[in-house]
Structure formats: C-alpha cells, structure tokens
Length: 397
Image 1: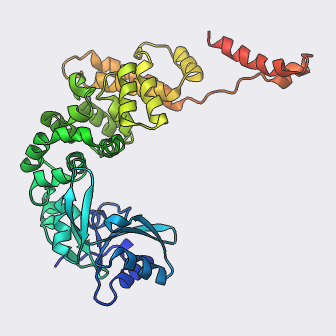
Image 2: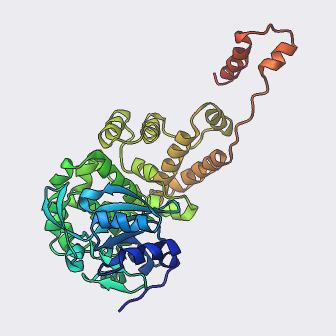
Image 3: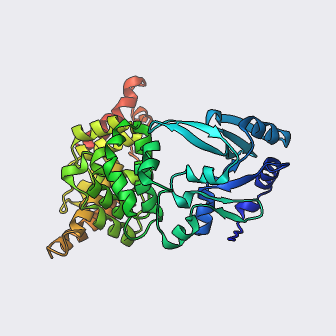
C-alpha cells in the first residue's frame, strides 16, 4: 500500500478533526487535490475530507472538540469546519442518484468505492487516512505515474452528470497531463460540448481562468479548438485563432513573465472593443477584468519606432497596464515571425527596448502645487487647486 508523509497531514488541527470523525464505527480520510498534489510533489492549498458521519453528526463532533462549523452545502453532505481560521470542507460519503448536468440529488452512504466512482477523474479520487495510508479504488496512482488524465468509468456518463467536467477535463490536462489527452475523454467532450451552453457564466469563466493560469495551457487550448469546445465557450477565438499562444509561452519562459490568465486571453481573442465588451458581459467578468480587456482592445497598436520621450509621455498620462499589455503582445507577435522573416528580429529588439522603458518607468511628481501659486500671490480658493492640474494637462497636448 502507498503511504505518504507530508507536513500538512501532521498538522495537529487536522489530526484532531480526523480523530473525532473516525471515532467509534466511523471513518474519515482526506480526499482529492491534497492527496494528488502530494503524490505529484506539488504545493497543497485546500484540504477536503470525506467521512462516513452524516452532516449533523459531523457538526456535533467538530463542535465537541471546539471547532466552528458552517453548513455550506449540507443538502449535499458538505460542512465547512474551521480550525484556527483554516477551513476544511468535510463531505459525507455519497452517490449521485439523479443529475441534470448541473445539479444532483444525492444519497448518503458508507461505501468508499461508491464515493470514489461518483467523482470525476481517477487522480482526484484518492484518499489518505491520518496515518498516511493511501486508499486508491480507481487506479489514480497509476494515472499519476503516467501523467494520464482519465475519467472514472464512462466518460460520457461523468459529463452528463455535470457538463462543467468538459472544461475541467482540459483544465486538469493543462495542469497535470502529458502527451495526448485520453481518447475516450476527447470523444465524450466533442459529442457533449453543446451542453456547455447550459452552464452558468461564472462557472465557465472560473474554469477558463484556472486553465489559462496553468504553466503552459497551449496543448489544452489546441485540443479544445480541435474538439470544438473552445468555440463553444469562446466563439470570439474561432476566426482569430490561437496561434499566438505558442510564441507567448516561449516568450514567457524566456523572459520570466508570470502566468497571467487575462493577458493570455488577450492573445487568443481579437482586439475588438465591441466583441470583447460582449465577451465580458457574457462570461460576467469582474469589473477590473472587463475594464482591462476593453482598454486593451481600444488601445492603438504599438509603434516599434516610437521615441522614448513619446512613450514616457503616454505612460505619464495614460494607463500603464494597457501600454504594457499591448507592447508585450506586439513583442510576442514579432517573436513568432522570426523563423519566416529575419527582419522580425529587429522588431523584437525594438519592442524589447520599449518594454524595458515601461517596466522601469516611475512617474515624476509634477513640480507645481497650490502652495507654490499662493506663495506667488495667487488668491486662495477652489480655483487655486485647479491651476496645477490644468498646467499638467497642457503638457500632454
């Protein structure tokens, strides 16, 4: 049997909770991402627990050892237990007895096999007890060793239970997969992609954002395009294409740019303000995401021969993020043309120089204020404060 040793598993709060939930004839184990990531030697953030105790009993036992509980999803067996401000999501073993692609009616039970088989992917259905012994009922460890992302059981059935699993399939492949995605999963995603239109916008964008945050989402995006899934959730990308994503990944690695999901989205959609406004509305992007995306679309294409003075003037009076987004994408576009056009190398050098100016830019403080004017004899009043701003604005004309 596989056994793991991890600092998070030895945490006194977690051990106390597992002990309380495992007393008597009950059992409790950590499940899902924490186990998967530990076996893959990746960071662990969230810790979820599966237990045979019914939700009301989970609450009683947790509160008996002084922990706070919140019935976050009690109809589906989920209680959030908070220990020293750290949340643990505790869910009773269950099986889904009725689903419509978005919601499920569940039946609680004590069968670990049934609980494992109702989950999405084999690598997410691994359990570990307080002693570190891993329970693998669906072949998840073997799939981790092969970097193979595979649905549990019938892929179509798993997707019919929750249509979001199509996007999760590509998201988890981007993070944990290698080579070609599982063939059965690809076929099921292709056949059932129309069901993506019935999902809430928030769930779709949440999955896309996580996918685009992967170290290299390019292979996942390629397969999404080939299966028609990308067009279903991002129709703006259909005629624009995703060719920029490959040189973007190379440039990010070479220049140590951080993963930026919204910037990567800009690389695969057309810079059309109207279409991107509609995209932001449809996917219910946060206001700051929408504003950055639309500002990017409205900004002019960068000029590789722009003078340093003109660029710094734009930085002083304009939106720095927009200028940086546009310059970075222009640099990536030129980088992608080097193999076919030697002249593109010079363009890359020019955009690199201008990007360095942007990254080093610190806006100077305007050397005039109301106090200076008052000292020169100007009368005090509301107009006095407006004069420096008017003088500063004239510099940008």
